[in-house]
Amino acid sequence: MSGLTLQNVTKQFGTFTAVRNVQLTVPHGTFVCLLGPSGCGKTTLMRMVAGLDLPTSGEIRLDGADITHVPTHKRDLGMVFQSLALFPHLTVGENIAYSLRIRGVGKEEQKKRVDELLSMIHLTGYADRPVAKLSGGQRQRVAIARALAISPKLFLLDEPLSALDAKLREAMQVELRQLQQRLGITTIVVTHDQREAMTMADTVVVMNGGEIRQAAPPVEIYRRPADTFVADFIGMTNLIDFSADASGASVLGSPVAGLALPAGLSSGILSVRPEDVRLTAPGNGAITGKVTFIRDLGGTIETFVEAGGKQIVAVSMPNARPEVAIGQEVGIGLDPADCVVLKS
Ligand code: ATP
Image (tube, rainbow, N blue to C red; front, side, top):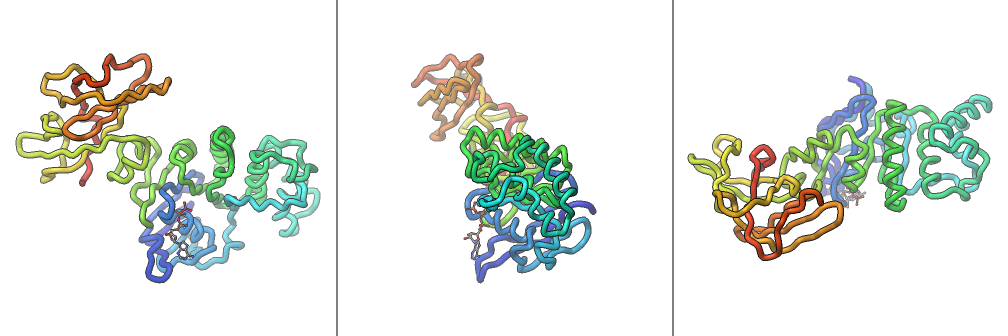
């Protein structure tokens, strides 16, 4: 199997389990983002892939070979961490060529490779600049080029863009993804920023409490979250209790027809994205609520409705602005196809 495979990987620090029984396959040439709240174990997992930490149990394989105990420098990795650690007294070219030089690559070959990499990161002609004179974004690109100089099998980045301001960060996310696609290099990025993960990844791996909660393409993570943690962590959602019996499901006191429920499930939680909540005239058997707040953000309008003691948010675009006012009674329309049924 070509690519990276983690089998039952666990890491304990004393009695504390930072990573629990992780199973993950990263096929060759794909881009994976490890995403989750602070302390969920993303960095620990990445450090084990990098060989900076040893798993307490489990196995790590790269292109079929067991690398669990192989030291970092023999794993054929390119790494970029949050603290870029470029050599400040060296030029851009010397930084990029560093790992080639220590591997004994000839001067000519070094120059050729540096020029190639500079062109790739859109910094052609910058070889002789001191890194101290670069902008934050340019430094980031040099760090990426330096990590890629040896054409690694695996490219690992831990919060690589977190020091950049929001605009530059978004631009770099697109650049990094395009670069990865051009090179076809197997890449793993640690981030706590869901937008960043959704922008770049083929597969988003959502972690919490040391465990993988879901590993799936970005749209699937958003549209079909596996549990309430993922539903709530990724974007905005409405988590609404429901109960069910032989006659069907009841949500906030009103029947909702057509929900596909797993056999034997008598209660649970529906995850409904705000853009899937339709506000209608009250009546017609729909869930009824009262508008409590309207947040007009220009590009989108969020309407807050209280129904059955629960706050439901509906999001609409300006061209479909709901004709409602605070205090007004409204109906809440839920399409069963948009509702994800989760266990409570
Ligand atoms: P962040 O986004 O804040 O960097 P993270 O998801 O990367 O968080 P980790 O750094 O992997 O989280 O840490 C996971 C858990 O393991 C945390 O509770 C942390 O305190 C603990 N931990 C990490 N390294 C060690 C260590 N060397 N010794 C003891 N506990 C550790």
